[in-house]
Length: 102
Image (cartoon, rainbow, N blue to C red; front, side, top):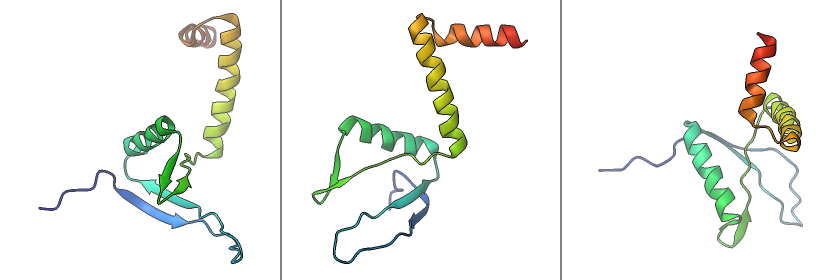
C-alpha cells in the first residue's frame, strides 16, 4: 500500500532568532536524520548541484558538526597540507605515526 519515505527524520526544529517583520528573514531549520547514509546522500547531491531552489528560493544545506569534529578536521587539514608539500601519501604518514608511537 503506502511506501516508506526514502529518508526518515528523527527530529526537526526551527532555530530561535529574532524575526524582523519589515524584512524577509532567513529561517534556519535543523533536521536530525535517523540514518547517517541519508545525510551523506543529501549533502553529496547538494554539492553536485551547487544551488538548490524551492519555489524560486535558494536553499543552502550545511552539515552541523560538533566542535570536536571541526577541530579534528582542522588539525588533519594542516597535516595533509604539509604532506602534500612533501608529496607523501596519507598512508605513509599513518604508517610512520604508528611505527613511532608503537
